[in-house]
Length: 238
Image (cartoon, rainbow, N blue to C red; front, side):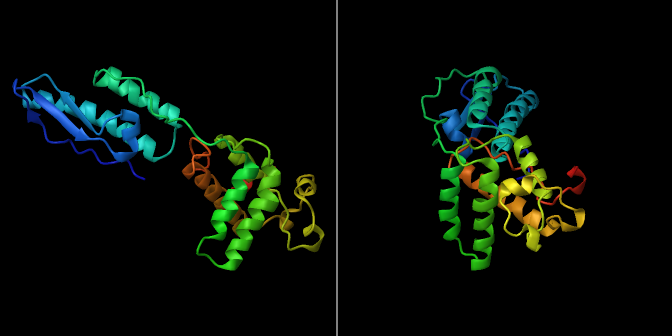
């Protein structure tokens, strides 16, 4: 999602002759702001000065909205940004958020993968697509990450996982077809028998789909795979 274009709300004067900045808070941020609208006296009657002040207040709000929309930070971090905006930017008193913003279900990879599979089986895709994605997520991805481990929110871990997959063999070759993940990790696979670019790209897309599913269902605070490039980078293979 591109950063929202800056559009300054219309300014109006209050009964004291000062300009007021008013704008509605976007729905995803209401739970953090604890209200639906910002109403801020700019404390000036000069329109040019008022526009300058309003630009600062509104653009900083749009920065928060952009960051939230990109899923770059956790709920905790978004709340800290909002609290700082209210307290130090527009200087309006606020009560500490009592709403359960931070609560999420505790999931490990094993339980999350089971739910992902249930969701994917219900998708309107071909049987072949279902089989490929479910086989990968249960037979390759899950053994790599460990069923009992907590779900990562570390971008570096996803890159490491991607690089591990890039060293895997093409299982169309008979000698690799029935090997376990543990056995494949120990191999030194010739370059001409490595997993194909198209298959690796499909693997990474499925991983991104899984983490997006976890974030959407609040198993994790943010999606660590959002900036991972699906296409393989061959020079990462040592």
